[in-house]
Length: 68
Image 1 (cartoon, rainbow, N blue to C red):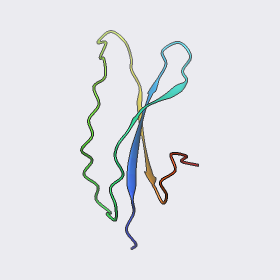
Image 2: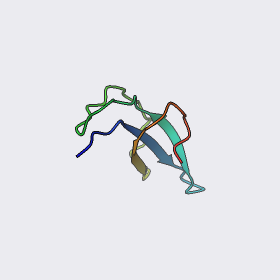
Image 3: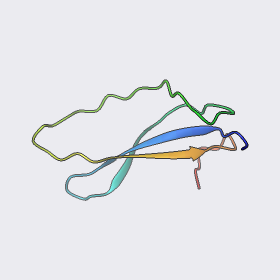
């Protein structure tokens, strides 16, 4: 296997619109198959509401912020 340069993008879903919004990105960790991300995020938690999170992992091959 070749090694990756992984990064994780955190998305939150709107309660009303159900649209996914980017909340934050971790750092890119070079040349690993087992990333240990350091960056932390603090989210407001509302016990009475359903809050959906989505974590997308990418192999970043350039310095461009564009993930497509």
